[in-house]
Image (tube, rainbow over all chains, first blue to last red; front, side):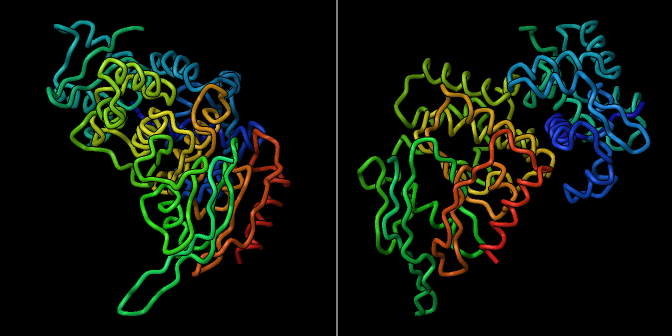
Length: 157
Length: 248
């Protein structure tokens, strides 16, 4: 499984930039506008695609109807959409299921790193862990207690 | 008028030489002003901001806030820093509550106010997280929440986006503008220092351009671009060019 190493803020930044360009933009031009190398901007494009916010065709990035609607919303309403979107990401679905099945709906960080290693081919599970927690905290789905080194399901609001 | 910067100059002494950093700066800040101070590095713009919030004394001249000489502990003025300035051993919520505790607000009320501004900047879910676990963008959101929580009349920001990656910075600027557009949100006016001209044209309704050292006000421009602004708009670029031509 591939998981893009990018934060939710970067993904939203990308959507805003594509929106400024009229809803469709060339990946190379976006990279140029932000003074990024193409491979530096790719993770945010992958992330936006994974969340169903953009479609990528022949190097062009096009906002989906969901993204256009999302960009019309304020900070708090956007959070709800992020929650629904992140909930649908396969890897996170799987991680939530593991937590639901476990005692007290918690998991040690070490086990979470193993889970990441088993699902993403990487030798850098630590930074993927940070990214996944960035997504799930944004979404209010999975939190991390760094004192106890445990991840846990967050209460539904 | 909210704030008046009147005849402010600043001289430093270095190896017995006197260096003039700021030279007779004058301008006023009104309600609803979103002012960006731009200028080349070393023009003294951060020094000027520190003088405006009362953290540094001018060599001559004065800064008035609502008719009174500004004091460093003025609770109606808040600051956002480039490097976030968070306490690493406190959580997100504790960092925000600390600013409220300093104002003598009771614990229960601190909780409510901190909660309100954590939500406003989209940090809910991160309340009990330590700064080391946050990305730069999230750290600066804490910086915003902490500054807004004291419900300041004047918000001062020193290069708040310059240590963030380009996409995060874009997202944070748009969120800041959303908060600014909300009528029931503090502050009444913003002064932001930046060296990024595009950023200034994107955010400000007034741009004050400082010259190279010693910093003098070269121009005070009203940016008459409707919001939301679009960086791809040719009119936007005309303003960016105009500001550049005044600096160079």
